Length: 162
Image 1 (spheres, rainbow, N blue to C red):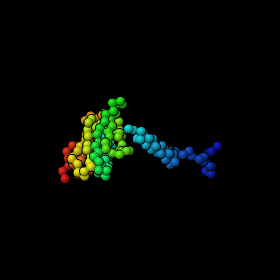
Image 2: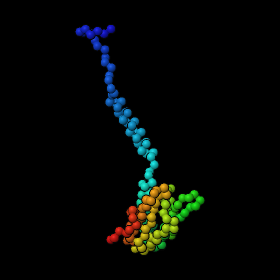
Image 3: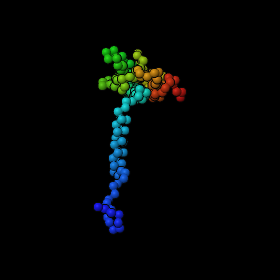
Image 4: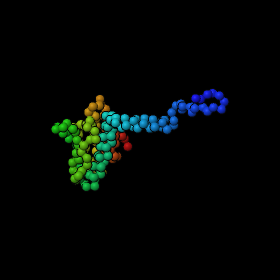
């Protein structure tokens, strides 16, 4: 039995607190859980609409370049698929396989009957198409060109002056 007399051996003291390794393991688990939660959250309608608008601007520029290269008129227009209530679009005048024909988000909508003529001339008329999210309350993005510059995404329809 231990005593407090001089020369007696003291028992090893129990450690108080946590070791550095234990703390690092807990922090790593919290980081993994946080990453999992943030990745599982869905994009908001606004960011999905922005992504679809930027993609459409790139696709319209690609269609415009192919129209010039082939010397054929290309028209982009919306299509309403009444079977499954999804809206899509088509590039008329491009040789197969053509360009993508669906939105990335199921909620993205363009005005039905919208059409944009893309060429074959290097200069086209000023063109614009409005995109909105089906679940959004009034947010609209415009994909526009003044006929000379590339298509770009903006929040208003007004053309940018040269």
